[in-house]
Length: 244
Image 1 (spheres, rainbow, N blue to C red):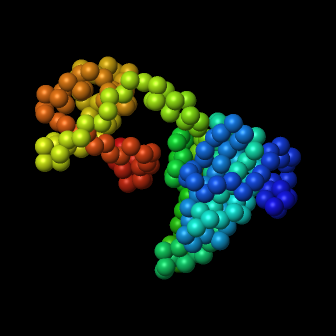
Image 2 (cartoon, rainbow, N blue to C red):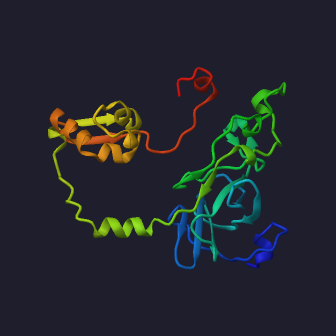
Image 3 (cartoon, one colour):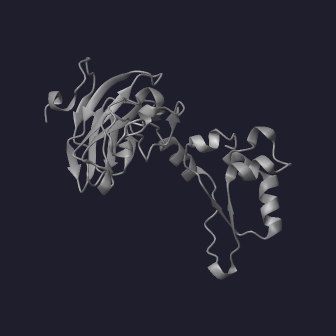
């Protein structure tokens, strides 16, 4: 497909484009560029939005016209790790059926490995107009890009190589009936432990340090289940009460 049919930006576009692959989902870096892949069962169109280094200005918008089993994908030749991006998705706006597609809203990639910027509470983030008499059945045309964090393309190949090269012990196959599973919120656990260094509290490194491991072993814990490990945003109800 010609590049002109893909790129809707009026700026000079210095990259090449091709169909890419539906897998893996998310943004995947290799030596030639970045593959983008996003699942949506009911979308009628998906646009990849590229932003400047600060995440303030949208510099290119690319239609991902390739679709494989409800996965929209495209490969951008020449793009590198560090690029900031988001999506705009077209489709039915039928709230009574659970469909709220609205291309005026910048969406985050659910498979993004890093976000840049902070989520800011604003009426533009809603798919509907807050003060409309039709309430959440209305349709908002406000653009929310200025109030959303941006996804960042991350090259995980060095991490994979380091993991393969490290002396990681094989997984212990312990029967479930002999297991003691400790379900924890990583931030809360490491922030409250008195023997964990202040700089490591609230981090994965804090959980991996000796005081934390010794404590879990002393309890007899054989398995740790972390939740949540993904990024999440606090609603206005919590932030208004200062309990986040």
